[in-house]
Length: 166
Image (tube, rainbow, N blue to C red; front, side):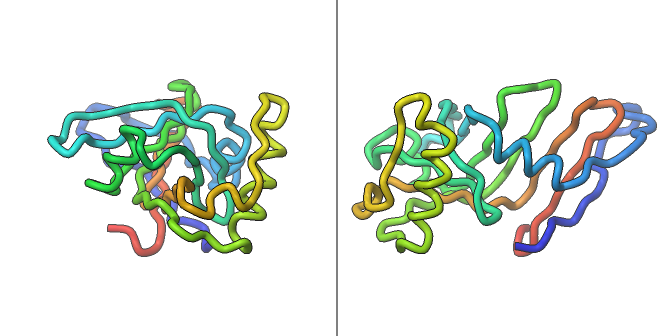
């Protein structure tokens, strides 16, 4: 995946006067890789918001998480694939907007590295999935469209826009 386009987010007049810098994508991507908990936001079919914490991995320029296809968020995603992934901190924020899909028959070329990343990250918490765990579904992939991030909102708010996004 190519690095995203980097720009200053649009702000209304008087909101942020003089941001000093833009964050490098590599720094933000490292936060996506190392975070333990992620907030997943989706929309009920009647457009009410829904948020739930999930464990996941950032790999190959996409975010992967797993869970039962019967969860509320899975049902929401079937109805509307637009999601937001947010890291826990509001001070050092990473907010990813993207499109989510459940992978019904993921290939070993994908599941082997995803399972390995999960084991490296979460085995100390008792979770060590095997690559064939998702053969019948339950693995979700979020393709990013836009990421907003900052380490100090008044200093370095940054927008990252990905190819093929609207």
